Image (cartoon, rainbow, N blue to C red; front, side):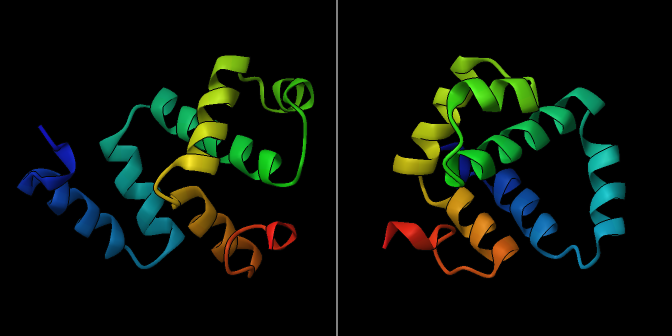
Length: 103
């Protein structure tokens, strides 16, 4: 079963894509997710950013407070996933692929 093809998931992604401000995002995610879920997602993004910057697992674990298993999972997604982390990192840094050094 492909969850990304379901109508409810498409509706969720459409809703997120239509949010226009950081405040709208805060309000929507506050209603949608638990505090722990938001913290976990924030830690994963921070982990991806640090991996993209060349940080090692030990430094990331100390800075972000995540396990090596989480870092490994984020690393796999960053390097072999759908490209979501790289797109977001690129948007945040103004770099097209999220890491200019990889060209």
